[in-house]
Length: 484
Image: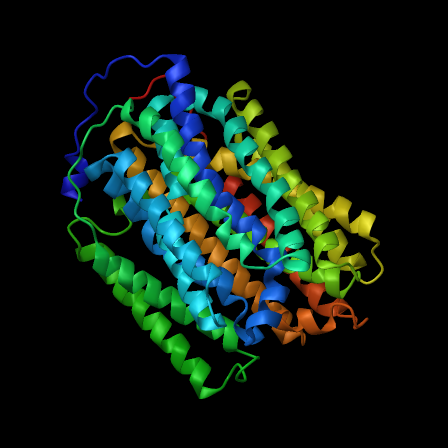
């Protein structure tokens, strides 16, 4: 921890014009598009992938493997960029991401695909954090929300293109195209960002990388996710296998906590986590990310199995929810600089989203596509309002020397929330007799699964309200007008 406290403040850097700032931010947003697109393009094709590769019971791990790798890398990317510079680390992340994409596209079976998704996560896991870090390098907190519309615009492209391309590729062409498309995008991103990132001022800071802590965290999380995926599915919840896996998870979590207390520079900075604003804002964003990724997995399945849509048609429902997320994020970004009590934006959004999900849970059996779509848009809107509030609050709560570490912690907790959200909702659905891998068999067979989906949407509503409580507990600090 002493090494963190000893980090230098940035030396004065040559002035960067507004045009140069826009070039740099535009370049890193292009790399962010890769990670954002990968989160929206896979879901509509999951049932087709299961039909092609088999072993549908492992289908949720297509999402989980990516998220586990992203969890391990998110805090480390911030530190690596402090050591080696933003440009080098961004290039490394994009390159690893493309290698994983090639392996995914050529995967001969489900297990190779899951392993390749983990490789993708190693590269893509830090791209979201690095985008926010670079924006933080260039723009003080009071002005940072103004660039939230740029971030939201990137998500909008992913929201529009991802579900549509995923559905079209899966239904009319070949599912592997959802991974092959990353190669030209990645090469274009590297070409576009090469020159602008050279203009970014760089202040190297010494860090020690806690790989042991990262390993313990991934092990603990993997064991927990295995228990959630297998409990009530492969084994009864009280079977010795499930209890043993949970015991291993608990032991690894305890070891991880011990490591945080003993490491010279722990995987997650205790100094950062002791900041109440960081802790509550990151916790709230963890909840919202769990809802967003969980719904991204289950909404297409719901629309196919319950409403009777095709893969392409179901992508429109996911598109509506994600466009709601974009609208909420854009509105939040524009309102934050104008409001003293900016957390009220996220509180209102979480309330709207939670109520929409409760209504959908109550009406899931007889809801028309239009009615369900409207509620999903409201749910997405609620989720979207919270992300800019959480990001700006966290970056405003720490000084510039801790910007990379704090942003890495925020991204790490969001990735953890995504992984746990998918696994938890999968466990809820499985406990009501629905296995997500069955979608490819029953989507067009007329089988009704109202209760499992009602439980999934009800659980998401509860998680949204927990996120609302997190924002209520978050102290509000006036936004800084300068970097330091």
